[in-house]
Amino acid sequence: MQILSGPNWAGAKPSSSSSALAPAQSALPLPLSLSLIAVQMLRGPAAALLRRLAPRVSGGGCGGATRRRLPIPIAPSLLARFSSAPTTSSSSPPPSSSAAGRDEDAEDEELPTLSNSDAGAPLSISVDRSGLYNPPEHSHEPSSDSELVKHLKSIIKFRSGPISVAEYMEEVLTNPQSGFYINRDVFGESGDFITSPEVSQMFGEMVGVWAMCLWEQMGQPEKVNLVELGPGRGTLLADLLRGSAKFANFTKALNINLVECSPTLQKIQYNTLKCEDELVDDGKRTVSKLCGTPVCWHASLEQVPSGSPTIIIAHEFYDALPIHQFQKASRGWCEKMVDLAEDSSFRFVLSPHPTASLIYLSKRCGWASSEELEKVEHIEVCPKGMELTEQIADRISSDGGGALIIDYGKNGIVSDSLQAIRKHKFVHILDDPGSADLSAYVDFASIRHSALEASDDISVHGPMTQSQFLGSLGINFRVEALLQNCTEEQAESLRTGYWRLVGDGEAPFWEGPEDQTPIGMGTRYLAMAIVNKKQGTPVPFE
Image (cartoon, rainbow, N blue to C red; front, side, top):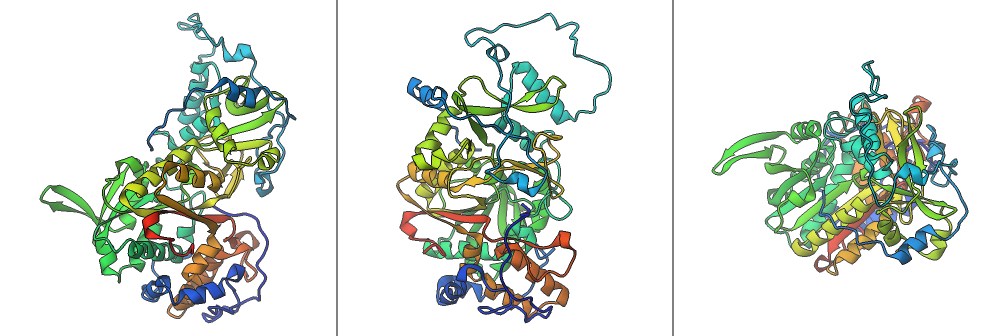
């Protein structure tokens, strides 16, 4: 995801030569005083692996469903807690198309509230059949609405009421026919946003160092399920495999499992990983020619075979999971919904009655302090994120291994962060559904609590910033090694990629167009690990 704002790193402007970046006291110093940590890592397992990585710049990435847990019935005391206590009313404006519009603390304009008559009688169903043969709203005139917009409107009309933000988000992103992720390549400069693996090959290589260190802590098992959730183009995994090609025992142990719902992206991943189909005794299998590793695709984590130690990578996956939004009103916490206005456009409204998702709001509030709750007027809750984390914890508890989660977010309650990005620019969330990416800040505190409550056999580490994570694994030494064996164009790309991965705000050394100034992701993105307790503390969370 593009990062559009933030303070600058202090530092001198480096020259364009390949020696402009020194490991410790360079023109691009490692943020947060990580040079000492990185030097100490030279004596550790990560550094030993790092020194053996492929010394050249690669072509990929340089420059440029879960188990359902049914909610329990909502107790009267819970309803009283969230529906009766009078509070100060506050509501939400349509998101701004500017970066400032994404500020979580921005105040919202007042949202309309559905009346009881709009919601229908709670204990009976009345069906109006008068329009079946000649519906007044039906017209044979051509409509400019997309198929997804028609589908969303039909759901709201059929229910005679609004849908949750979570349902809207799920339809917009993963509708089987028209979802944003389903039939297109949305990544990279020509897409709608850029992710860290597309910025530089070094990101996938550092994740590979982390995975190999975890494999060693697991006792170097002969068979490991390497799982990536939402692999995008497959760039991260391709760089991981290229970087670890020298470690034959590690790559030989891998069985790659990609959790991907988009047929279009599956084909791109197949090509990125240099896959070929082979005939075997029991039929056919797909193998990545990058290192001879078998590859399988699945629609959900549940479908990934169990019984073997598992390493799970979830990079920018949680941020796209559907969220429920709640707003504090005069009658208590109300869920924010998506409805149709009189002109048939989409609008936000507040539900007049308690909704089933209040159970998740109650659970999330139970993990927060009263001081934290008093400061917020809006709360975002991600039930699917909670359920996915429980699945991950259960898998790691039973099979061993660990999971690495990297995403942009907060280590606490997320207030009002839902955003839409189209062609690298923020747009209104309800504008032309299906044409823009929807995502929200990840609540890392919720992930931690969900994992710890799911199993006593796992431990959770972090979050730490992406800058700390990559720096502790030795990315500054890695970029120095690559700069010794590349063209000047590649060197400039490496320096830019390095800044985007670990920097904070606009790069001070940029000499190109202002609208293309590299923006650092180093402090906006966080890294967290969930591992089996038997393996100890994972690198670099010691």
